[in-house]
Image (cartoon, rainbow, N blue to C red):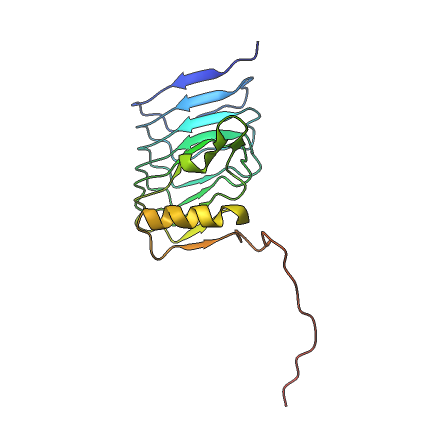
Length: 178
């Protein structure tokens, strides 16, 4: 049976995690260590991570799209990108004093039994937060969350990069000045 693998390694001096030869889903509990980031490029299975109180600077899942749970509180992280992880059920990014950017596009599970999981996404008390990107159908919910947490200067959009998140039009022509 290919059941989950639980790794509890809180309160150690661990600086990295190697999951290259993992053969089943991983639940990693690694709070209070010296982790500076994660390499998701070789991960093939579902993943749940608790990594609060680590010196992590950035989290980017890239082409990995099986993240179930991420809790990253009280870190110096500046950017978190979990876009494309549509099965993500729980997300905590709280009390990160350097966090400026959150990319959450297509990263919220809608479970047939539990419903829309947006209510389990928390990113409050991040004083330098400037930009949040979510899917277009999440804009109202995200704005309500931002308002409820007292954010007033955060840009919220569905355009996470130069590829628009919705229908867009281009204008072509020649510009002449007299």
